[in-house]
Image 1: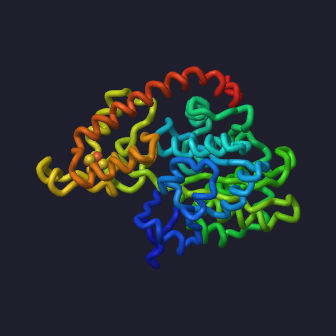
Image 2: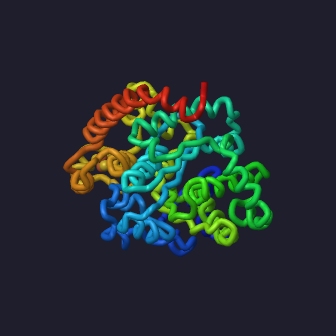
Image 3: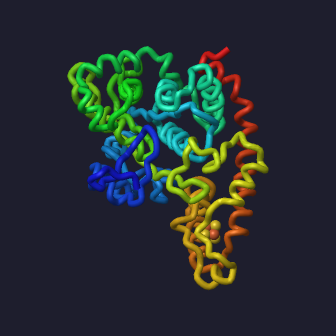
Length: 370
Ligand code: SF4
């Protein structure tokens, strides 16, 4: 677990966050439990039903808007540092889910953060951004009911960052993000601008807004909610809500899939043989021998293969439950389980890439890239 010297978990949006015990986050950060709301959600998304989305802040406000068919927005985005993978797929699908439930959707290409955090020049992140937006469209994002933009080109989020800067001290930024170079603090203020952009008059004024993200992004939410209340009188901001999903494991079983280590994940643009090889070599919760596994069963709780099925690739909840029991009882062995997953993933990737190719021109147009 990433911990401070006092033993508390540290949620770090710039770098590596590892959470060993999600239960502790409720107490340490005041994140609310998502499960009690589940029965009230008209059509809960599979990540909600399976506990992958485990926490929230003020999601009740979004729930009311959904139930009463009132206006609300969903806002999230991607740092354009590479091709889509299972981590970025998660947030994209959540944004599309809320859009399909009636939200106006905002999807930010966080190229300022890519520059400040990952040192990726804007010319390079622009190339990734075109692919990332084509991925989003291929997954079902409807651009007619949404707004996709680059931070570096959206003057309104930069203006908000400048205005917000007046009410934030260096001590506050250090308390939230730790000691960082100034560019990261600026990019955090721009992210606050992103989150509150849907509430500007240009987009119809204040409205409930949900930000679905990995829990490592919570510091941005805490900063933005504080700023929303400080600037409530001027803009009428409603405090943004959030949902938090668990962080998907690396293929080697370590706690978070990271773009910084190419062996810990695969992208949807990799050769099928490379994807298959990485999954074949992935860590599992299996036993050293088939005999032991038949006798003792596997440990799905620590298995990235199980997570991939649960987070993304089993459409039916009953299939997740079945795999859990088959694994625990030793009925299924890791080799056959991996073979099945490779087939599912390669089929998904093939179809996704076909749709992505069809959306590349549209993505270039949206981002105004020649
Ligand atoms: S059988 Fe499947 S879920 Fe169980 S440990 Fe092996 S790979 Fe993981």
